[in-house]
Amino acid sequence: KHSLRGGGRRRRLRGRFPTQPLARVMAPQTPHPQAPQPPPQSQPLQPSSSLQVDTGADQSSSTFTLHNEDHTIGNTLRYVLNRSPEVSFVGYSVPHPSEPKMNIRIQTVGPPATEVLHTALGTLYEVSSHVLDTFEDAVVTHRAKQTSTTETN
Image (tube, rainbow, N blue to C red; front, side):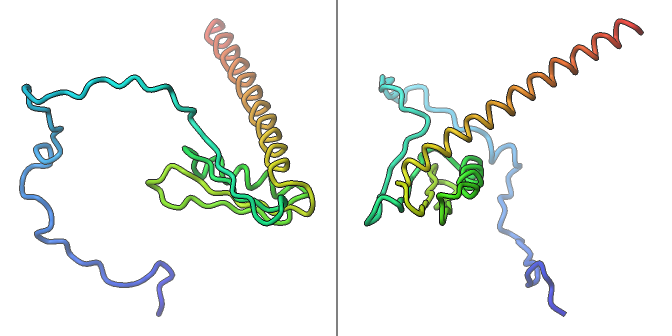
């Protein structure tokens, strides 16, 4: 029989864990009182997200790198782009979980990929604004019902 979960026996990890209590091992390191402290740096605030564009031979195919983004925006943006008739291919990847960036590849049937991405981001903004408004209305309605049932009791 083959298992669908993958195989192999579980190995025992005897002797691979510290013998000290966990609280002691995980205790935060406090700096030495006489250790020099680094001076506070006053750097300008960076935007939470930035964009790099790698255009192919023509403008109908491009790879965009979004910094400080992950699967949340990647999958949503991929879905919105897939619904566009101008897009022939779209895919995204997060190169590594510890790297805060996402690559999205767009190939179109004619218009420049940057315009298609701009349109998709506008659509995504409108959809998320609608979802937020609907949620806030539902919260107000729910709280009104709660206060009316509390007052009648």
